[in-house]
Image (cartoon, rainbow, N blue to C red; front, side, top):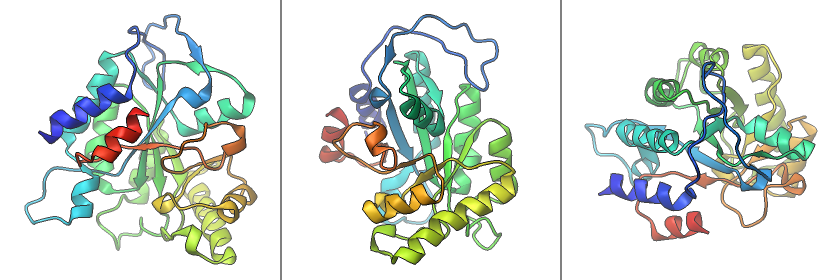
Amino acid sequence: MKKAFLMTLFIITFITRPTIHVNNAYAAQATTHDSSLVSPDKIKILVYHSIAPTPKKKESTMTLHYRIKPSVFESQMKYLKDNGYNTITFSTLVKSIQDGTKLPSNDVVLTFDDGWKNQYTYAYPILKKYNYIGTFFIITSYPTGKYPAYMSWDEIISLDKSGMEIGSHTVHHLNLAKSKNQSIQEEATNSKKVLEEKIGHTIKTFAFPDYAHNQATELAIKNASYAGARVGYGKYKNNIDHIYELTSQEVVNNPNPFLSKRIAD
């Protein structure tokens, strides 16, 4: 029943468009057809967290809420592929907003928060299967070996080398809107520094933990030299005036009427 709901959610979320194929990082042999161009604020940004099978032990309500079964995730990727959708990185969307350029109407941004190991184990192979790319926002204090539920640096580097985008999700996953200004700046700056040292190139994007943001947090992200940042659900347009608070839509394992309503809006 939940699987059927999620597929219905996807059908509600996306307006059916003609089937089109656009080159991406993996699809070197793909055929490119003409596609209508739209303003970047029309492009959907989806947020995933845990991609994992049902555990043997009982899980918390929150864990269940954010955990998508690999089979459901694959059915969603197949739905996107069958309906002609192409994936772009979050930084590609940010650059389009900055440059004032339009994007193909079949583009979609897939983002993954926290750096869970199950994203590497289950989501990553499915993304490769469908020639799709995603943006993975990493909590930089976790890939140390002390937290086996999260990706290692080798796995994160492997994602980056394969064409996935790596972005920052702070050092300690603090609610920045409730933090002191010094802590906010340190979380933003230090996470970027660590990622760049590990991966070897500039990190351009940021996602707010718990989607918590305000004017002070957005200023800290700007001061840390990120190009753009992602928050949660919002009513405003994803344009240059909101480059550090670009809105997104969660994909969760919970038939919540409010969620289905806000995605349909």
